[in-house]
Image 1: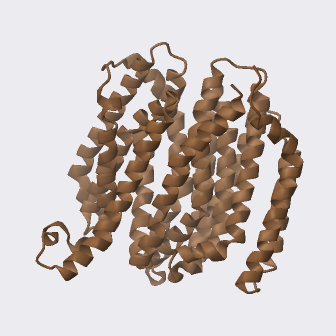
Image 2: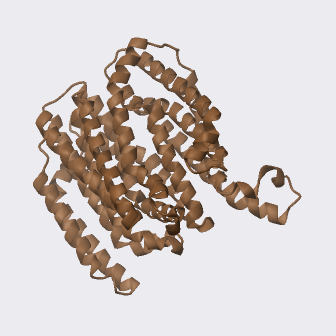
Length: 495
């Protein structure tokens, strides 16, 4: 089968769960910003940053390790069972520890009056960690429709429970104060219902994956686990460093800004605008879901054409990323209407976050060399370098620039990681990337974006019209250059 057609097909299917799912989930951002003030929404942004760290720690690189060992093993069931047992055991230990230390943890995180937030989120992240390998198994076994169904149910229930607790319950309590709702809903919980909704949705996922999790032959291979942990530990380091690069700013803002600048307010503003870059994130996530099993499946029978295939994949990844960047910036006046007006002061971070995410996506695509060559320690080194840059710039810039300093830090971090990963990759696994073509497209994108800034003072309709012309011109230039290759990629294989 044409490898490009397979990658495009898998990306499209996983993209439904990732892009459509994330898009639906993203509607909670305008919903929440319409209900909560920035300092209240800052609680959501801040605590979910901790959740991101916890998720990486609780999965400790086992998802990638599972792909690596299962794709090369004659006994995939043993690899699967060993991985599941390992994650379930560590998640259970995590839940026990959090239960005993929830009050101390809440105080340390500056939520001394809400230890229940810590407990609810601990349960949620533990459940999500337990389902990581079953989801990976669905991807490895090429069962994207089951993957899609479970993901969509989770997202639908999360949204539904949010609306139920934050809108329907207050309405019913107001108009029917003596109804059963008074036993189910308490206004004092407030933003905590965001976390309760997430917990209930995660429980539904655990139920839907029952057969994948529990209807297996329980086999635990200690030696296999040690090998997997040895392979996955650098991935864990990469993951933790990656969370530093992506989420530490929402935590540090609370500690590095003086009370006079209302740190939680700034976290809320920054978090809402950070999420406006969701389209780039959705594209990268869908691509990652398809690309990782794609290149691992090819690694078992390496071909001389593989580097050329990876180079072409990279080129089109950059093209689509640039299209998303320009689309978001050309129509930001429309996109910004999705969040409440009191959050608009943070729109200046959006182009920086979009570019940072694009650089991160390129880094991920470049990173195949250290995964295929079992040199994952290099991924750890690069990610740690990025974490050092992120921490240094956040500590340096936040006190003087606020959340704008955090945006600059994440942009510089991913740019450096991308560049370093490229040069090491070319040394250990040379891939003939078309730097000239990608550089030309990037330069065009910068010029088109710069041209759009000249329309900033125009009324909305003329501005959008001119930006649409710029967008069509950029697409036309791309299509003119890539038309022949695109036709070759998309045509059916002749047997």
